[in-house]
Length: 376
Image 1: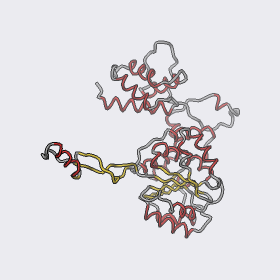
Image 2 (image 1 turned 45 degrees about the vertical axis):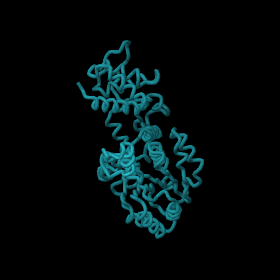
Image 3 (image 1 turned 135 degrees about the vertical axis):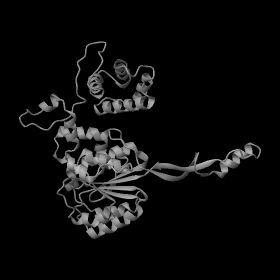
Image 4 (image 1 turned 135 degrees about the horizontal axis):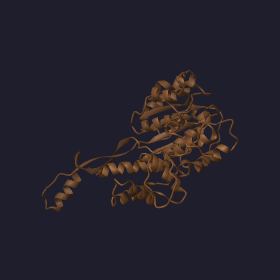
């Protein structure tokens, strides 16, 4: 009989697969699924199938996707349902590379099944070279991206079984017991998610990547809204955190477009970092700068501001979309001025690269740049 931990892990993995396929299997439905499994035989595929179908599906439109995901996730088999249904052996439908022989619009009307290898290829492709349908698929997967955040100790304390002596709680308990100290109370620092500040370059040279980077920032804001700040950078610094707090990514992108005045303009990163350093947000935070380093202002000013930033920030991560190309060399004046003060210099050209960046923000090493570039 599987233990409760393994059942919960399988159920969580199945729910993630359903969400990736477009089924609204949120946290509450996942908990209902687990409660249903507690009353059933989890070794029976029929019981697991019907428990998930009843609890994880929101309506009739979800049933075909659910059947496909169940068949793929549980080894390509599905127990016979009460009524006839077609069995499909793929996890989900994704966009395939454009075929010039196909009539315009036909690809959106007829969805083709994609294998796991095709999905993996899409994850590692440069977003600047995707078709519109493929880009929509990448944006959908980015919206589902949820990762933990690196933790830091706060100044506040919490009761603990290990740690320093909590004199006040110990004395209060002794007073309640008539002066008898029966037990020493201990305390430890609370931990909080480390604040992340994201600066996205929206200049003309970053146009193929800016929208996808902002969608990645939207996923960060949705994961930790109280510990994430996002700014756009072009000819001026614009705070867009409030706009990115909207649940719907497309609505959030529309709100950003309305408030960013310098789309596809020039880049003055030195001046914008100087404006950022006047704010309290970077102090002690992980600062992510997403830019190709084409600086139109003074490279010396950029280097001076990066030096200041490196002294007050916990970590400085520079995301350059061109770093995904093995032949890329950081030869621009802006990159040469900034790199001495950068903690991590990473790629930002594909979904796999964004997943690697999310791992860095969670305090994990993620994959090396050599591995990410090799997959591209």
